[in-house]
Length: 117
Length: 115
Image (tube, rainbow over all chains, first blue to last red; front, side, top):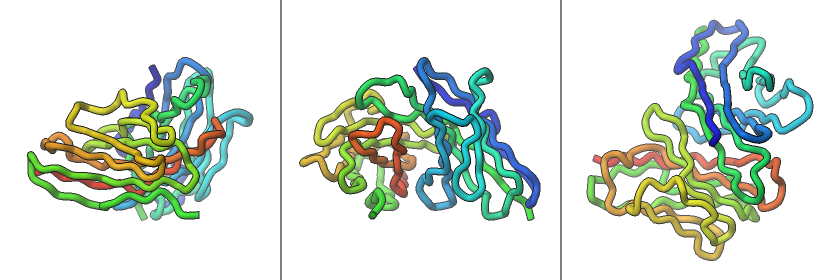
């Protein structure tokens, strides 16, 4: 079975400061990892993913995430937060070793990011 | 290219009524997924279609939920009769058949409130 933990329900950061949203995962095979963002009254938007290759993945809106296999983590980061980054962030995992079509994602419970002006 | 669309965007019904949600995947995407997020919880997988076939419906909560994908295009998710605990946001996502490393793209969701 696969699982995702987002230990923080809420993260507050001042505008211009760096931000980190934490995610740890558990999966039996190779992890495919994703970050999605949900703005108020909007759907889930894809931010970035890690499949293979460089551990540091760059995505949309200046976000990046670092895959750490030994710590089973995939924390989302941004060097300088904007007020407009305030949203609900979801980490998700899929077992990359799953054969065929069983590709559903397992999500964390979400982290509400608030960037204060 | 149009994204995943869902209808309605919001639905408010009374306990015991029936509601049908619709999802139109990205054109050509054979994989279609339904997920649900109840208030404050994680987004949970409900079921997965490959074309018109149900590949995995292990996440469906009970037999009050019925999903269909006639013709392998759009999908519907019917809840009958609805209960209070069915309230939440229902998301649909789609994925091409090939491309193991592809990204699931999600629709805007349907916000269901059962009173």
